[in-house]
Amino acid sequence: MLELPGFVDLQVNGFAGIDFSSPDLSEAELRRAFRSILSNGTAAFLPTVITSPMEVYRRNLPLIARALRVEEFSGRVLGLHLEGPFISAVPGAVGAHNPDHVCEPDVDLLARLLDWAGGTVRLLTVAAELPGVESIIRFAAQRGVTVSVGHSLFDQRDLARAYAAGARGLTHLGNGLPNLLPRHPNPIWEGLADDGFTAMVIADGHHLPSTVVKTVARAKGIERLVVVSDASPVAGLPPGEYDVLGNRAILEPSGRLYNPDKQCLVGSSATMLNCMNFLASLEVLDLPALLAVGFHNPLRLISLDAGAIECSSGPPMIFEAGVFRLGSQV
Image 1 (cartoon, one colour):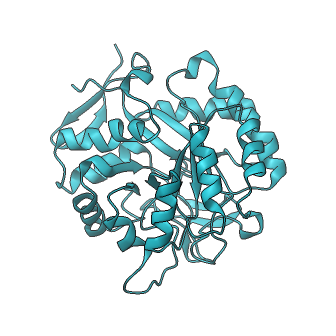
Image 2 (cartoon, rainbow, N blue to C red):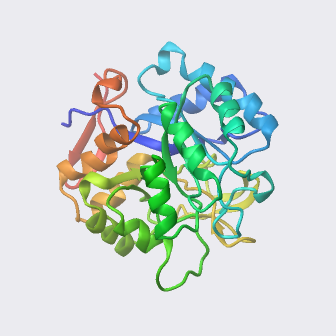
């Protein structure tokens, strides 16, 4: 039996029909979603708000901040991930985000977002090629926020400037990109080659082929790899057609969730437990390495350690015959 209560997920957009970026989000829904996520193999996580209209930020950030301060979620819901609004608006790179709500780098706007969130933002995703983004990165880093590069068509120079300003992560490397890229250079190669950045990957079996996941693991090394679920609001729901993060989306029986109009994925339908079992099935990482990329590394990326996690809640994690599963709570 493992001495871990589950895994740490830095990117959760919603769960069981509840969307953290919805203009109609309620505190009761938040608590229900948090409990569902934490009962499915996730020990701790960051609720994620994607690129949204200002009125959604103004309403939802304080709402989520209040919910994560509830004693029940102490040491389990660790803060917020703002995925946007300072990302690329280019088709493909913008992914499932609405380009109409993308913003140019603006320190005053970022300050408002951080203030609305009451100091709970732990992670910020930005595009490294945007003019003036270095000021955003520096300001966030000074406020104790980890900055990650994603939804970005960066080149080597962009990435170097972002690193110099304080960025340290790569949000879902290999995704949030156009379906067709130059053979080389392109953001995937540049991200793999830069040892200053920790790569987050969505290991749900749909966002990246197994060969790519293996390559990322080998190129970045165990110390610079983090697994995320990128769970969408329909994670935990049956196959069907849904409105997901403002997109028409099809959830296939296989778990693949995509927008047939944009031909892009719309987050995942997976939990961290699903993702870690997919990664384990590739037999490229041993158990200590799996625990690093699924528990310890995510915490380190946002400047926390295992002591920040409340380990007494929830059933224990068991690893048998190459598979993670939840045990019975005694």
